Every structure is written in structure tokens, then in C-alpha cells.
Length: 368
Image (cartoon, rainbow, N blue to C red):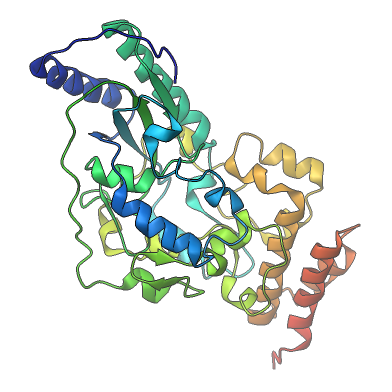
């Protein structure tokens, strides 16, 4: 925590005014909402530990690596008293375009959050500016900036800070804007006044559960990562289970179905942040074009985006599955896809296994 030593002695009125000022600054910096909460995550800790015990984190060993630091903010950053939580909207386009893209078997669907600049860079820079403004006003204080970059339970903190409630799909929802937003935090050693937690408005709706392609939402509010397409295409470095491959469709990086079909997202609006606008070559690209990228082209074309971190091998693995699904659903360019799969140069053993599976989809289909 930066600048740990301070001797602030604010009155309750001064702290209230300071919290209001922080929220105004945050709005000016491009955050759509700001809330403040304390460090008590007792309920969230119980749920998180149960999720880990059920092995639903899969290969994400980092989720259990830090003991109680993830669920107890004051252990992660000693001296933390309150946490400033922010929301930044990212949806880059008309949702109907994204929904329509899911039916285009020869095109790639890429999770909408990753189409533009890497959100880690955008949000962290803005949060640092917010912390600097606060420091200029009150002098040195203890703080640390986070955005999905350390063992932090961002969603429960956001819910406690009043930014929205955690929906049955495990994403944070806000009744006026839906769920298309990123989260960020500033841990502070300031005794700021805290906001009221958000109320859950999911009601009896189960749309997200019903539309999940792999039935990864195994019960309301619980996602089994091992079944989730986002996990399979981004976090996992292993072979994708064969039983799940046909269910993935053309989704090669992440999955948005639980958000695309959530009724609350009918209120979502396009982000004002141009950094999150889709790059022209990623908005709705042809699978064959992406499959042809060399590793050098992959690194160049995904530079500055969140996509780059999965690496070229996982990229090819994911696209091979999508091409197999394309072969299984449409005969229009069967020969072209088959040729591309067979000619892919020097794939790894894992990629080759997925290519072989993809080719089998053509052999097993009767297009007549």
C-alpha cells in the first residue's frame, strides 16, 4: 500500500464531503458509477470457499493460491479500511449484431469485452489518476489500485458498494444499465462513509441459465468454470473435452450468451470509451482468416488487447473447434475449410488433436 503513513483526522462531515468529491472526480475520469464499502466479505468468503471445495475453478489454481487474502482485503493490504469501487461500461455495439453473429458459423464470435484495448490498462491508469487527485487534496494516504489484477473479490465488493447485484450468471447487474461493464478498486486506509449494498432484482428469471450453451450455470449464482466456454477458451491450456466442443459453436474467445439474453441488458447503451470500440479485424472476422495467422501475425494483430494473453496455441485450438462446428452445420465452404485444416503448418500435438476432431465432423455429416 503506497504512502502508508498519514495523520489525517477528519470529521464525519469532512469525510462525507470527501466521498462525494471522489465520486465527482471518478465521473469526470470516465467511470459511470462509484461506491464505497468496508472490508467485511464474510458471506462471500463462505460461498467462495464452497466453490473452491467443489473444484469448480478447474485449472485456475491462482484462485486458491493466496489463502484468505482474496476474501479478506485487510490481509491483502494491511491497513485497508474502506474500498472505492468503480464501474466503467464497455459494450461496443448494438447487441442485436452480437446475437446475429452467433448464427454465422463461418465467422468468429469473440467476447465483446476484448474487442478493443485491454481494459486492465485503461482502468488502472484512470484509477491511479483518481488516487493522485485524492492525494493532492488531502496529502499522503495509504492506497493500492486494482482491476482484475490481484486476489480481489471484485464482484462481492461491487455489490456491497451499491454498484449492482450479482446475478444468477455470477456477473454484476445494474437495473438501469445491465451488466456490460468492468470493475476496479482502490483499497484505502481512509475511514470513508460506506454506501448501501445493492438489492437483487433477478426475481424468478432464469434466462441466463436456460441459454448457457454448455449448462455451466449449474445452479443460480454458481458457475462451474470447467463447463464455461469463457474458461475453456481463455483460462484452460488443456484439450477441450470432446463432449463440449459441439456446444461451443463459433465462440473462439469467451462467451457472452448469459449477458446477451439477460432481460436487464435491454437497457444497456454503447460505451462512450472509444478504447473499447471493436477493432475492424476482430468485430466479426472469418474463421479461416484467423486460422491462417502465424504466431507473429497473432501477436501483432492482438497487441494491446486482452486476447493476446491466451497465446497462439490456444488461439488455433479454439478456432479448430469452431471450424469443426462449421463443417458440421454448413456445406457451403466445406472443401476450403477441410483444406485449411489439413494444411495448417507445424501445429502442436494439442492443436493437431483438435484439427483431427474438426475434420471428423465433415466425415460424420450427411449434407445431402
